[in-house]
Length: 238
Ligand code: HEM
Ligand code: HEM
Image 1 (cartoon, rainbow, N blue to C red):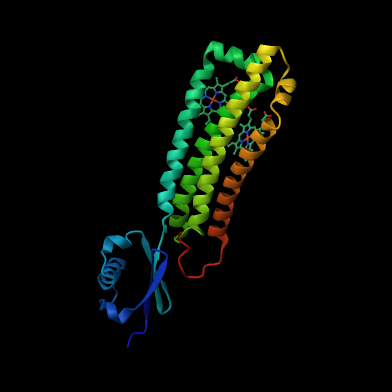
Image 2: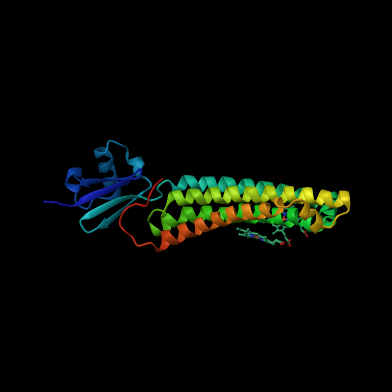
């Protein structure tokens, strides 16, 4: 008499199937288990390609490894290469002698465009977001359990993409407007900046906060994925 159950997590739900119902041979393989489960659930074995099989006493867990997290990886990669595209186009534009001259002659205002806009779109948008994509892809596979929360990962994606976009647009716009005002009216940077208050301050604080939240949600998700106690069930999809 076999009282073992197979717990299948799929699409955010758990199903419990008595092992005896699956009519598996002695010493069945993971592939045979997935094929039998697929037959009982009226689906195909390919639906379990991203599942891992874990044995815990009388329970066998068929756990979805990535729980939708892989789709987010593509989102991070697309945003990262888009930011790199913008950053490298700016890089090429700002090597031009006229542009360099404008940036140097506008001091603090030019500094907003190069390096502040350029460095962050390339490093935070391109490099850090690509690193985040890598971490989100690798962690479930290295730890053999899903991310703590796909919802948190999605929020971190929008925090990063939204924050870097706002930061970039804000730095380039403030830099251009304040720099142009300096040249047109012979003002110093601090006087030009004062003319654009409270927009200048808001243009720093709002995008910086969104970028910060994007980073911290990612960091929290990584810590929770790595250090949370294993409960034997799949992470929340959503
Ligand atoms: C086509 C590609 C690129 C071009 C032509 C380019 C060009 C430039 C130029 C002309 C500067 C100003 C240097 C100065 O003020 O002396 C600069 C600064 C900078 N670039 Fe790029 N860049 C490119 C791509 C990148 C990428 C991919 C990254 C990062 C991943 C990056 C990171 C930076 C940083 C951090 C600074 C500021 C450095 C500082 O202030 O000392 N750049 N870049
Ligand atoms: C919430 C996130 C972040 C915020 C709000 C932020 C903001 C700033 C600010 C205000 C500066 C000083 C600018 C100045 O006065 O010259 C700065 C400099 C810089 N940041 Fe960030 N930063 C963030 C994250 C990052 C990350 C993750 C990286 C790299 C991966 C980075 C790379 C740089 C570099 C290279 C500079 C120096 C630019 C230069 O003057 O050459 N930042 N950042």
